[in-house]
Image 1 (cartoon, rainbow, N blue to C red):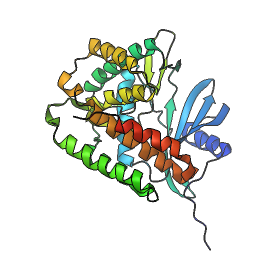
Image 2: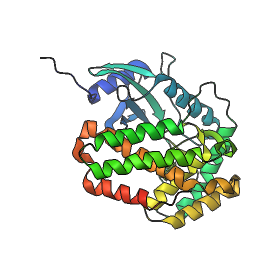
Image 3: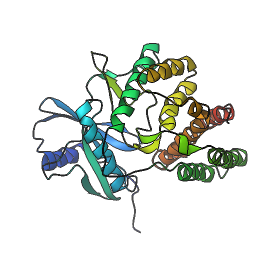
Image 4: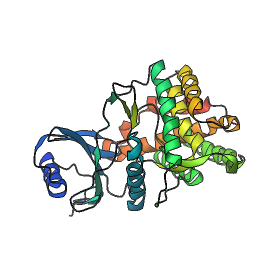
Length: 317
């Protein structure tokens, strides 16, 4: 009988060897698994400089999408507002790793100097709103050769279906997501999206994925979901986070700060709850993905019912 693996964890020794071969890192004083979520991230210290080596799971990342994300980060480097990828000695940003379970892509990223922003503070929401507006303005100035678009309807359909399949033993909850899928697709179709601002978005600015330095300057990281999308979605991610933390006053501080830098079409904000529902469904589907590595108990009933109640309480237009 042949045993197949769906996931493997690369050893620290192998990571060091990969970094030496591809980046000539010969003075590594620290190398540890930093985080394992949608990818395995290793924190590296070489010659006193901090880096993050991100290894994507097999079949979790499309090569062209990764090229787009790398180009965006490279172009943003001039504005000093984000982390950026490091080119290997072989003149490539993407490292291909032949693992037991199949091909995995990896990239080496610079450190975003500073400390993680404490997004439960009122002051933090003001800073976050300001810098998200600056980021959007910077993104508008970029000329990107690659293209990656966030397809709303495709994402809603796939994310919902993933949850529905997962809940095959829970008829009531399963039916809820079937109805949510139908409702949100209908609602989005009835919105005149052609009038909405469209451009490159980070798509995961929930209050984290940023670091702040001693000068109160913010830098963003984790551009895995970056794509062309409706800007209202990018704003809705932060609002979704505020509502989950039951801190809606932060949203008011955030959006006021954002509008001081960049104009917003107020008509778009009327429909923001529709996008929050989409985000809520996507987040649950990402948790479903994690059960493949962490087990079905990773999503317990308490988590599931809290998420369902959250979606039920949103008023849609």
